[in-house]
Amino acid sequence: MNSRELIFLSKGLPKNKVYKDEAYVSGIWKEQCQELDVSFNQITGDQVANPEYHGGSDRVVCVYPFEHYAHWETVFGETLPASPFGENLTITGMKEDQVCIGDVFQIGEAVLQVSQGRYPCSTINKRNHNHLLLKRIIETGYTGYFFRVLEEGKITADSRIHKLLSHPAQITVASVHHLYFHDKSPSMEMIEKILSVEELAGQWRKYLLELKDK
Image (cartoon, rainbow, N blue to C red; front, side):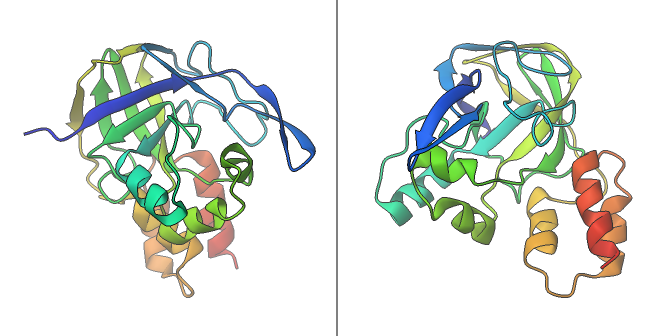
């Protein structure tokens, strides 16, 4: 039985917002939709505000596991809206410890590959009016992750999720996050093993090379 299921589809253009009297512009504010038109570099009607730190061909589709919603609602005592983490796909059965860098999935017409975990920034606190959220996300590793696009196409609310390839290296998104954020003495062997995965996104490769050189 396939436990992978789409819960929400979301997209949005950058919006002007205010948090604690500070104005900011961000693409994190997304709205539910019934269809995503996914291309190699972006989703139609979905953009980032700061392309220096967000977006690009390695980070076209943002995914967040729906299972984490219940955790955050328990921790903070608030019901979450759809896509509070700025994700495009809210999915069950695909948590960070269940997917590996390089795994390939077909969702609707689109063929997508796991490229990196998400490196959350403080905008996620502003989006949810919660100054503790970023810290807790890093602590738990409940970050979500990104897909690059191997084949363009439409994803609809009733699209099925099919796993096409399990990457042989079996490097989970959760394991990379743990090594980078929590491992006080990271193994050079493990860093090298992760870096050997060609499908790892360039930004995460850069982070790990910096960690290796420390």
